[in-house]
Amino acid sequence: MSNVPSDLKYTKTHEWVRTLPDGTVEVGITDHAQHALGDLVFVEVPEAGRKLSAGDPFAVVESVKAASDVYSPVSGEVTASNAALAGEPEAINSDAYGKGWLMRVRPTAGAGAALLSPAEYEKLIAEEGD
Amino acid sequence: MAFIPHTRGDVESMLEAIGVGSIEQLFDEIPANLRLAGLSGVPEAASEMEVGRLMTERARLDGRPLCFIGAGAYEHHIPAAVWAIATRGEFYSAYTPYQAEASQGTLQLLYEYQTMMASLTAMEVSNASLYDGASAMGEACLMAVRANRKSHSKRILVASTVHPHYRRTSVAVAGNQELVFEELPYCTEEGCIIVGALHRYDGQDITALVIQQPNFFGRLEDVDALCDWAHARNILVVAVVNPTSLALLKPPGQWGTKGADIAVGEGQPLGVPLSSGGPYFGFMAARMEHVRHMPGRIIGRTLDAAGRSGFTLTLQAREQHIRRAKATSNICTNQGLLVTAATIYLSLMGPAGLERVAAAAHARTRELVGALTRVPGVRRLFRGPVFHEEAVALDRPPAPVLEKLTARGILGGLDLGEHYPELGPALLVCATETKTSADIERYASALAECMREARAA
Picture 1 (cartoon, each protein chain N blue to C red):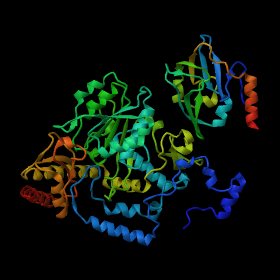
Picture 2 (cartoon, chains in turn brown, purple):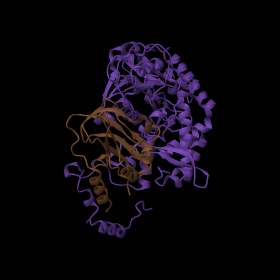
Picture 3 (tube, rainbow over the protein chains, first blue to last red):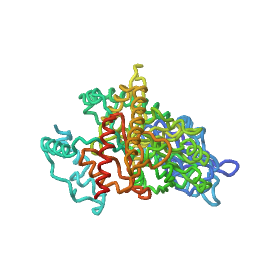
């Protein structure tokens, strides 16, 4: 069973979103996604200052099996990215919701409507498993 | 021998399993207007015997001229052992192995090749080779765009002293990926890039600078200053180098304070004979920080489950079977056989042997240019040091003179007029360790005769 924390929002493309106290949002890939990808060997994260629209690819994760784009769940400007992943991509495998975060974004006002609740995301991955 | 192992029955049962009527149907999604009906200009298949005979006849037309043309492909002595070993069955049949680890000997050879190339270029990592020097430069430009995260312009500054074919090939390889190539002017007196003229690019977003050393004219660029200029402006440096020259010249990994970011070049001088343009092989080496952006593949040494040492395909980060639709390079092979020859060549020569080859080629070129410039109407074109190639100016159009030389069995050099008309009538000439003083004397006296005849005509 995949770990789907109840305090986060999700996307259909398997990103998680955490709203931080300062109003920025932290984004990563879900436990389900890291499990499907297998051992990660390379992660390319965006530069701070980059402007993103919801749905834009902002990162690339490469595992021993495949390379995948990661899509921004929100529109906004990148405030930080997780540089530690360059030397330790496996942090996404071991701690997808913590040390495996990819970027922080300051969302533009009114963005972030179409996110999934934990229950909706659990349903999505259960259906995918069929 | 059948190269496609599936029988008609195999194919039919596979098609049935996926519910498709024919193999052709699998390509239905490709629109008809993008499909090629047939290959025009390609003759009917011929038997091995027919092809062998045709090639022998064509080779005879080339004759055995005394060759003083370099310009990117160089005649060097190849010890007999190189191809005797490279054509052993264990190596000769080897294409890039698909079940790579089953071919430990091939992987070990590629690993040793990479080690030698990294050492020769003083770079941290080398891939297992690319198609040729020109396409390696195109790949290096694409790689620089991926690796330089601080630049978004995809603008590549290319010295106009880089081989003209390499510049054209790079546009062909990378031009459709929105890369913009801009040429840096050179000094027509020195035959080198003018470092002082670069300030007009200050403050602009530029992704990479491409420099060739020695440059197309054989001249030595101020690579330290060019490299430092680029790095101070977050511009990555792509070095195009001649592998033989690295036995004498400062390797790209040591250019300037930081060293070049990517080094590429033509591997042909390392044990591959001149043969109507190929097959040759390209090499590529880089700083470790850029390894994930490198095209091609890297072989590594490792331990198996039982703790025995072995070799494995360590990295193929850009290739189609890893990144599928997101592959950023169409390179998914290496030039196995030619790399085999180069690895054997380098191991037979050793560092001291390669240095002797490079020093002899340099000395022969000096002797050649000395002899040619004693001929009336011939002078050195540029001032300053060269490696094993130099431009000489003639007082008349080179084409008829070269024709007369060819009739005497001498390939006198490359007419620079096609690519650098601003230089006036000029020849690019080269002599390697394969040329003797008698050869050089023969060329010089033939040139004197041909110039006299051309003047009289």
